Image (cartoon, rainbow, N blue to C red; front, side, top):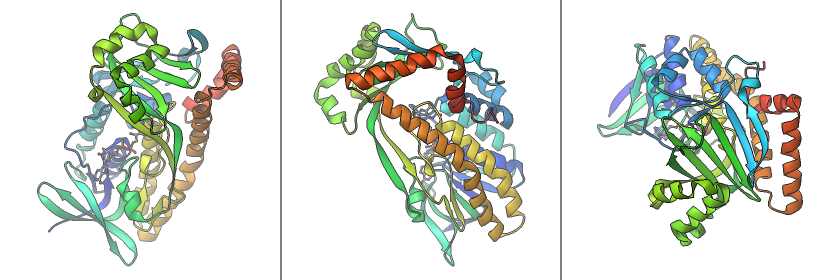
Length: 399
Ligand SMILES: Cc1cc2nc3c(=O)[nH]c(=O)nc-3n(C[C@H](O)[C@H](O)[C@H](O)COP(=O)(O)OP(=O)(O)OC[C@H]3O[C@@H](n4cnc5c(N)ncnc54)[C@H](O)[C@@H]3O)c2cc1C
């Protein structure tokens, strides 16, 4: 069996893993990032980068490359109920340097991170390579066993980082306890050509009783649509046939009826996301640490996942490179310190999302009326709007 030895072995080449790879390689460490796929192509993934995530791309020095490669600037967010606008947010009203969300295809972002990291001799991206087991020495994780088309390999590392996303195998293999909480809905995603009468700078949220849909302009000339179904409700939706799906969308965006019927002709044009949050009380054990969705899966609402993935990596890299220069105990302490720093912000995002999730599923008339009153009051108060939305989109930049 082939053997490799590095300072840091990162499992997963998503936003968290690639950013960590770049940031530790910049600090002179040897790092291998294992990615099970042979490409970065992934659709229906975090493409809306929150303003805080944009500020992090600037800090990483890659914002210009990302925008040059192609991105849409999101200037407004509009929440409409049965055709009436309840809330309109103009991101230009915020005083922050990076105030607009960006829509960036995740493959573009990951390719730029990989290119940037590849400039450093200590960085290796091992594509088509999956972590299949943990190596352990005296109770501490000492690396992973990996599998690729070339065969199995042992990769020894001073720290192994699980950045393998929402269905993390590293979390399973670590035996760290966790709690997964299914939310009340799942989401069906699909892509449409950008509707000619809709501007490409506005993110629309449409609600109708307990149903809601997100209509997100997507680079270069598409619109991503996500609408809720009851938890595990895919079979029922499918039983009603594609016509049932078309009709569901008509309730939220009747003006798109023709476009929907022309574009969505097969279930393979759709994708279903199982919505849950996961809480992992301890993100690390000696030799192993989890980051990104592996440590804290959030709901996709309000586009927070990429921002937290980037910020995890950028918080961890300096702590880790300093600790690696000292010894294994310091690495263990750095992993704990990392969780201590990052947890409060995640808790805030999770509780905001859960509140929002609950409001979106209201269907009885009293709660629907209260929800409308809440959004209208928010819309009328620029102060409240800045305060509430600022805590979602500008957590980092408000510091
Ligand atoms: C449908 C959908 C829409 C979303 N929309 C948004 C949005 O608009 N904005 C936003 O900010 N967030 C959004 N998110 C969330 C966002 O995509 C994630 O929070 C973010 O990608 C997390 O990054 P990560 O690096 O932790 O994990 P991931 O992006 O999931 O990356 C994990 C990587 O690990 C690899 N991997 C898994 N197992 C192994 C293994 N054993 N060995 C090697 N490699 C492995 C996977 O192939 C993958 O590349 C969305 C998520 C989904 C699913």
